[in-house]
Image 1 (cartoon, rainbow, N blue to C red):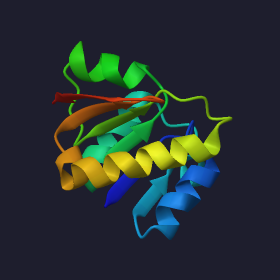
Image 2: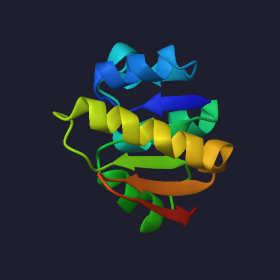
Image 3: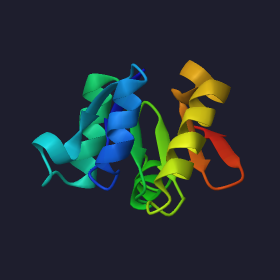
Image 4: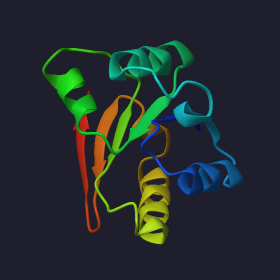
Length: 116
């Protein structure tokens, strides 16, 4: 699966996705100074799911009409890395390519999903 990981995503999570066979561009590795709008535009150009812990992206999508192929919002404390990784991989297993065209919030116990 194609991902664009925002700079607020931990490097360990990026490594986990990559080791699971996912193609991940990580903003922190090449363009840490991009604005949220620029990050979303990159996700659109590249056809990648945007993975973030920043709630501002939801605002851009739903209130300002910004397009994005898919938006996955992590709402688990990044200090709990094993749980974050486990829940994200559960979401990938549950939704697969259906993550495209979807806004998905991942927390410790549930997934909240909305069509974009």
